[in-house]
Image (cartoon, one colour):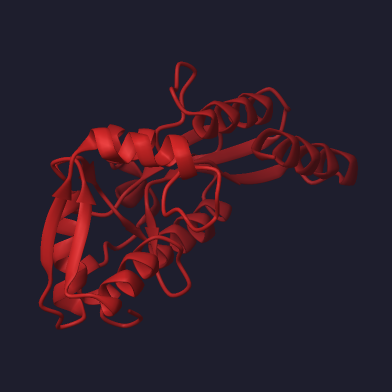
Length: 208
């Protein structure tokens, strides 16, 4: 879907005579990616770059905000129990970005020709370990939570057995990406587009 949908939209834009194209990809997208998710994202990026359109590509990291799928899911689990498990040692780094930061980036790019032809990683201004992220979520909910690590071997076994079922909280691709971490190699989008950073700890209090 990532490739076909992007191709169809880019082709439709060219047919309609729309030359400006702002595309949302994903942080971690690259040619030699280990996850199918990032590989198809890379294919979409390459098609857009060769399309002849005046493109700007954004690669957001973990997006948070009202209605998100990840932070809200973790908060939902925490509401149900005083004990919460996490994968492995919980050290993998994450740099969540607000949906409002992403929206600001898209809006500013439309009016700044200097962004044409560029690919911007989009991350917030703080790197958390996965375990630290869980602690921040619990604090935002005023929830006392006990965190217990689950060895990676058990997670892999669970994914092998149940990864294809909707009730299981993580897929093989998602676990691969989680272990890789999700941080940005550079942060030029904020300075070049005039975007202000938002505070993760304060922002999540508004919706979880």
